[in-house]
Length: 132
Image 1 (cartoon, rainbow, N blue to C red):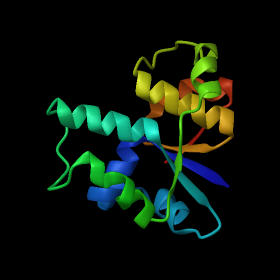
Image 2: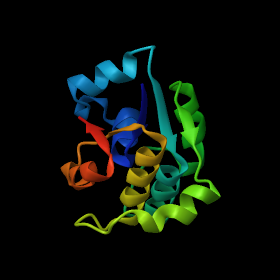
Image 3: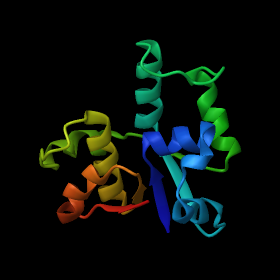
């Protein structure tokens, strides 16, 4: 099974792994799963770092791709098809554009989103699967 990390999940894996649920910990340690990180999350982190809304504990955003690869995770890039069909995702309560794109990527790629954010559950009717 393939999983896509929400941005906060990635940050917690890197900096605060005690915040990770037991279920998520099992999934991340299972050698039979593929864990992906969207380049959207890296962009979101970089943007929030630049504005001062996010600190990275002695790291900078440009160090994150290597950290992700060292964890054995893969990257999910935003391609033109995914970007151009994003309008098909209904605007529900969840307004954050980064979260909405992560949901859209997970739905289209049939990945399970790893996120503590229950707001994503609004997209279950669109085919989104979420665990925490």
